[in-house]
Image (cartoon, rainbow, N blue to C red; front, side):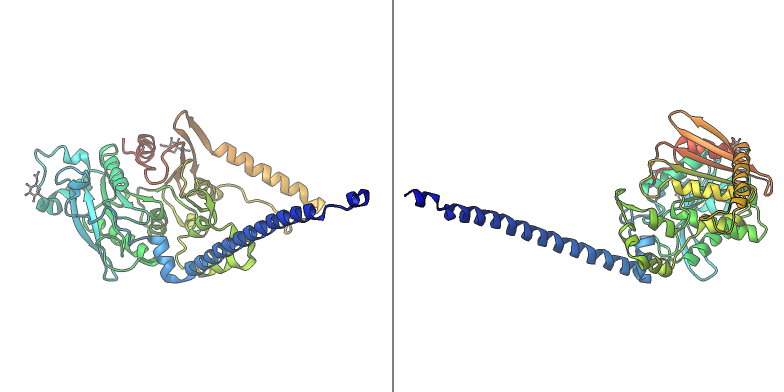
Length: 414
Ligand SMILES: *[C@@H]1O[C@H](CO)[C@@H](O)[C@H](O)[C@H]1NC(C)=O
Ligand SMILES: *[C@@H]1O[C@H](CO)[C@@H](O)[C@H](O)[C@H]1NC(C)=O
């Protein structure tokens, strides 16, 4: 009995082992499942990135021009979207390459309110528009991607410009958008912008009475037009970039899906993948590269709570404008291994640049609103201003009274 007592109870151990091996196999199953899910996500992700490399998908994803918001829009009835009776003319702008763009011309309230009764639609084109653009500044507005010129946030922009700033507004829908013909492309959108400019010119507008305003993707279009006008020796009133980006490539790099998931972070782990996508990027809208070729005064505005395009894009652009007026950096050929004799020249040139920047840039803080930074560019005789707001998000940036007033003061609307 005593010996028997010493025999270990294998059954108990066996039961124990069974239980723990059950546990292990459960864990293994779970890990396998998680692996499979991760694999599927990985394949979907790589698939999506490859799809983005194809011109068709890239076009759809960048322009989102087939998203027609509001649904079933009636562009003949701007009143339906909040504009005053017969204040707006729905019309078409032809382009030199044979497209036809849907557009709205909205009268300045300063003009509209002086009329004893709302004009007839017929008299807008023949009479009121030519007189209004002679007597009031005109905003040439380029909207962002997706939706149409009747989109609620955009109508708010027209209202702000025509009422608070007393400006006429010409807003076009690019090729492939809304009721415009054609298919969008980078060069196509630049052609459309020029067509809108030329339409105003044919109506007798003075170039220096036209303020080019772009929002989001429209800032890329505005920069392209501003560059082209400078090349042709035409001086517009100025350029306003609302919620801009430095280039589409940088947007991809900084884009967070739903403001949370960094789009390109996983791709950075595959060395060649980022380069591949950049190589296949057809529509570049490289505003940063256009900066040195823009001669007009520039106002850049961005909200710090913009989850579509981070506000740091505006810092990059502002610094690029500033770059033209700061002393050059004296950097050694190899900045990783600086030789002792090069060190002094380098640090003193950095310090000199920093001091010049501080002397040049004026910063004004406005509690509850944000701040502005501006400098005078003596080489091009123009003011460059950055407006950073605390609020406003992406779509409605620019309709705030504070941003409107910054535009109004800078471009002499009041
Ligand atoms: C707007 O224009 C139409 C067409 O020209 C005209 O019939 C209508 O009376 C105008 N509306 C107002 C409120 O004057
Ligand atoms: C640029 O224009 C703004 C608005 O008029 C003004 O407040 C600012 O002082 C100007 N900056 C410079 C450096 O001239």
